[in-house]
Image (cartoon, rainbow, N blue to C red; front, top):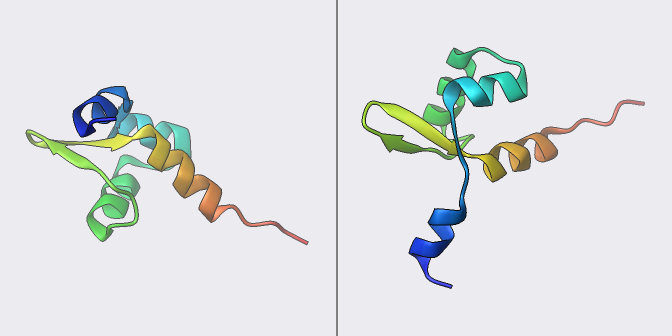
Length: 66
């Protein structure tokens, strides 16, 4: 499968959408992007985060309490 086709199938979310899903502020999402914790692409002056990466981050951050 070509890279172009793969990217065409990716659903990108805005910072505001990511913040809503994660129930954090937009500033927290911006910090995560700038720190490299959450991959994103830049579109003009704004960022877009692949939806799969948001879910991967949340799964990896899950803490099981006693």
